[in-house]
Image (cartoon, rainbow, N blue to C red):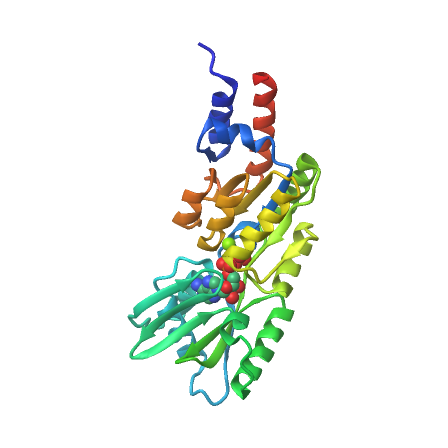
Length: 298
Ligand code: ADP
Ligand code: MG
């Protein structure tokens, strides 16, 4: 027997490196007319590097002790930024202390208890809120400086006191710009960028890949809001993401694709399809496969 078109499209998608979870999903992929993309780990390679260590004056930490402290708190984290911090510590031969009470807050950061003190590592804006003391002011200035250089700034606090910042930089995937262009043609609309990172880092990545519509500083529920806004305007939204923070938006989208290699388990479960070959060009490829199959079905 000849295979039904949607099934053979699924097999084809598999050969292209995309695991499509059902024939229904295979069919839906061809109907998307808007795309929302996550930044860290999706448009970027997801293997960021620590580029700067900035202990705050008077906190008694030097570069190495700041990094060791951050690495201890990030040890259990599966976030790309957490892995970058841990890699940097290991590369420098630092001992990473054991922690208890690890907690991760998607879109914000992590916290843990290290030798009796609570260490938090995460978004400067989220961790500082509206604090106006001297340490917070200094930390905000360093964060702005790192962000102007296009880096993601991550704040480290000890018992709620800012003690330093890390600059972290990630490279755009080489195929990201071509993928954005292909998706623009296929869906007749420009993909939007939805990220939990700061607006400056977001703008820099968006500029490199040809995206002009940017939503930055988003918590997981804000990503859902961005997807809903498009849906309510009558669009069939394809959401592409990798993180725990993307999971609710992946679930809310018309169709969702997760990045398989470095994607979190929650993202993989929430998505309708998983990119196994770790290449963004597989996205326009499966949309085209779906459209061809649907022409054969109808
Ligand atoms: P994106 O939406 O681009 O994938 P996330 O929502 O995962 O980014 O992260 C948003 C921001 O939250 C990061 O830029 C960082 O400031 C902070 N953050 C989240 N998780 C961590 C972590 N494990 N370590 C440090 N910072 C984190
Ligand atoms: Mg991400």
